[in-house]
Length: 119
Picture 1 (tube, rainbow, N blue to C red):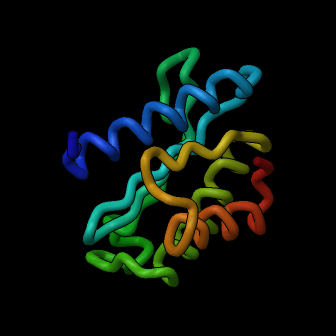
Picture 2 (picture 1 turned 30 degrees about the horizontal axis):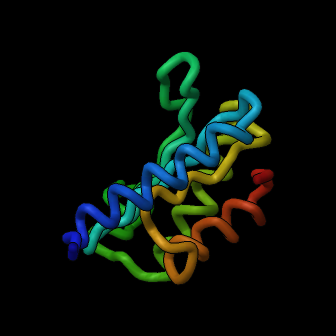
């Protein structure tokens, strides 16, 4: 039976997160959300339930409001790496959610790696 796009997305998201939790070994999570107009990312400590660092194209400081392209994703990735370093975070695991690892999500991950985050 055919499933809706939303149901397939939710299944993919749960599958990815389940696999990541098994191999996380107490590391923090770098969670990505991509909408049609913006992209945002957070460094989350699941044990404590706190967000340690976050970056988004919605922030006026970055000057990317309403932009959702590869350039914007690269800038957000570099910014999250900088903020995570300031918060004392070196190593995370990359939670892409239900999004495929190409295009904007890949550009964000590459920029975060270049900024010094290890995953």
